[in-house]
Length: 356
Image (cartoon, rainbow, N blue to C red; front, side, top):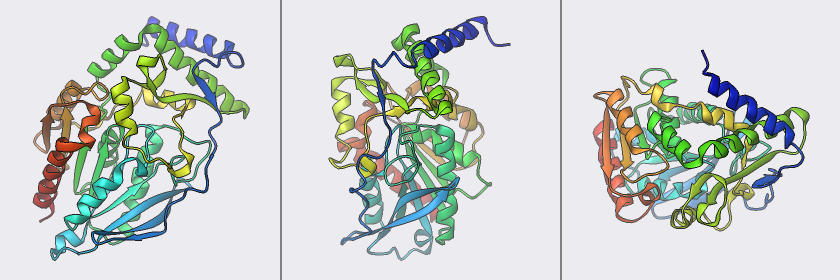
């Protein structure tokens, strides 16, 4: 039975949402259509380390864009020649936001990779833009897996970071046994109980109702064919900005440091409210029990976005096939400096052990 308090909260959020359909715009933005169609992927790049080509395929009838990286100097190992790492980015992010540094590092080790954009992000099609929907994202992972199989790769490794750290677990659990060779889940969102309690403690009842009201408002706009409505993906909490992620000034700019000045698809710091319902019920931790695929999970002890304790719970549930790499630092530290070098060495060693 659904608790009375939950019913009351949902009912109140519905009332609030309906009442503010036309009047409440505080922290909300409207639009979500491509602003920049001129900045598109360069068809082919060749360097001393890698070659990058643009690929297109479909997910649920929508065109997906991906970058296929192959090493300039191919490995002499047959196992490495048939190996590919599939890369996807996290919450509201896209492939040009930091994934190239992983693909280039893999190419230097003789490993091919494919980095892709979710529907409605980056170079991929789909409007309105910026629909963060974990169930749709997992569908896009599965479509990418099917596509790389057509390229002749037989050893497929999934690597997801942050929100996508959960996606790779769900996509693997939903795939045919043995079709995924290994998983690299980096500072993953697990949707566990500790993180949910901490988030509620941070945003309180008012923040929760505000989030649910945005969900109702944009969902009704979608039903009526009206202008999409959303809010910031990342807000600077020190400036009083409301967003899906409320970051300190330091973390806000660490996140921005990953992003190029010109972003594919005219990316904006916005997300659609209609995806909130899907996000609220998303629990990758439910898919990892007795996981049969070799998996390495990296976690940072001071991560205040993807709760460390939930990651530990997930690894304990996973069993013998999951290995936890724990480091000191916050969520955004994994993308830079010594921590980045440390985790990449771990990933190289893990892949070599699995595929050789």
